[in-house]
Each structure stands twice: as C-alpha cells, then as structure tokens.
Length: 166
Image 1 (cartoon, rainbow, N blue to C red):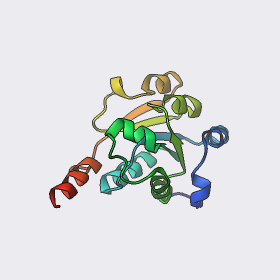
Image 2: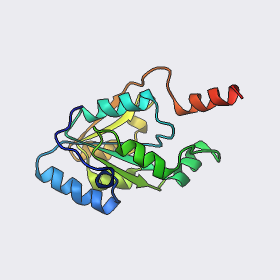
Image 3: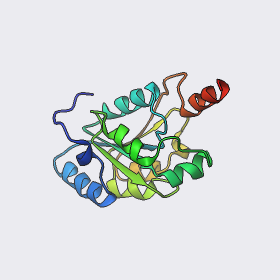
Image 4: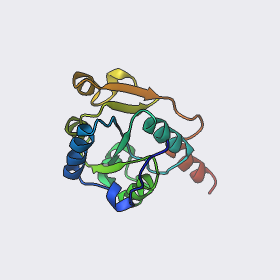
C-alpha cells in the first residue's frame, strides 16, 4: 500500500475530464490503473481494507464515488448519511488512493469506458456476470477482480445498529 509521492486532497479529487487526461498520462508512463466504485457512505474498516487491497493490485487507484442523488436512488431516501463533499474528502485522505471522481449516472460504465482501467475491482457480493464494466474492461485487455469483504462491516449494518440503540 505504500505510494511514492504525496498528493493533496485537492489534487486527488478530480473532474471526469481531468481524470481522463490523468489516465492517459498514467498509461503513457506504463502505470497499471485500478478502478473501483461505490457509495462509501460511512467509512469503516471494511472499506479501508478493501481499498487498500485494491491499491495493491496496481500503481494507481481510482475511486468512482456515487453522487448524493445516485446514492439516494440506490439506497433510499435517507441516504447518504455523509454528503458527497464529506465522502470525497474521506476517500481522498487515504494515502493509497490516487484519484476520486464523482459520477451521477446509475452505473459507472461511462467512466470505466473513459478510463479503461487495467484492473476493475468490486467487493465480494459480486460475480463477473453482474459487475458493470467487466466485459468492457476484459475486451480492452484488462482484468476483473472480486475482493472478499472484511466480515462484520457494512454501512447498512452500522446504521441499523445505531437505530436499534435509540
């Protein structure tokens, strides 16, 4: 998980266009780009372990982060708990994350097609058939990895635990 250079949060949180430019540069430098995405609503040890493991699969870790509106569509009207500004700040603060980009579409497919990662990563409740961008990544010469979850951690279970203690 060690990275050679330090970036500021502002440098890590990028627009789609900036990310595409950076991805071209990284590829030209021969860097292996790893892409993952998610809501990352309440950061917990499972997220940290997952992102750290994803980072170990290449040289550059890019995290696509659902906007608040897309989290609401996916998880329900009471989500997200943390807004997209807070979530981008938290993800970007991790030393092994190189870029964070928001996406508002239902899926990150357009973003994955634009970046063309060498490795596409999702968590353990997915399989190759239901990972958005898997066939496109493979068609571009990349690979798809499913990483195991750290047992006992999920944002939903944390929320349920909080609700139960009121």
